[in-house]
Length: 200
Image 1 (spheres, rainbow, N blue to C red):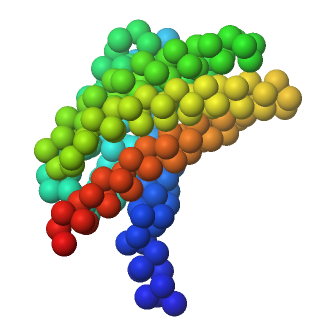
Image 2: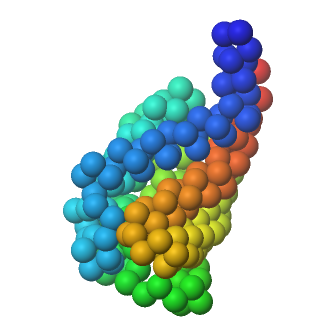
C-alpha cells in the first residue's frame, strides 16, 4: 500500500494534489495571523504575512524539485505585500462590502487579473532559473487568480446572503484558493514533467 502511495505522489497527479493541499493548508494557517476583512483593512503587512504563510507551505513541495526554493517564500511575501500596499489590498483575504453578485463578478475578474500579474511575476522570478517556459507561470497565475477570486467572491456573496453569516465569505475564499491552486498546479505539473525528462 505504501509503495502505491509513493508512486502516486511522485507522478503528475500526485504533484497536482500535493500543490492543492499545501496551498489550502497555507491559506488556512494564514488565517491565524490574517483576519479576513474588507480591502481597506488588509494592507501591506497583512499581505506580507499571508504571503509568507502560503509561500512557506508551498515551499515544502517545491524544495523537493527546485534548488534555492526558499526564495519562493520571499517572492510570495513581497508580492502579496506589494499588492496589499498598493491600495488594491491583500485580495486573497478580502471580503467585499457589497453583496451584489454582478458587481463582485466584475471586480473579482479585474482584481483577480491584477493579483495574478503581481503574484505571477514575483514567483516567476524564482522559477525562471529552474524551469523552461517559466513565463507560463504568469499566465496560469493570471487565469487562476481571475477565476479563483471571482468564484470566491460570488460564492461568498451567495452563502453570506443565504445564511446571513460572514463565515460564508471564508468558505468562498477557501474555494477561490482551491481554484487558484488547481489551475497553477497544472503549470507546476508541466514544470515537474519537463524537469524529470531533462534529468533522464
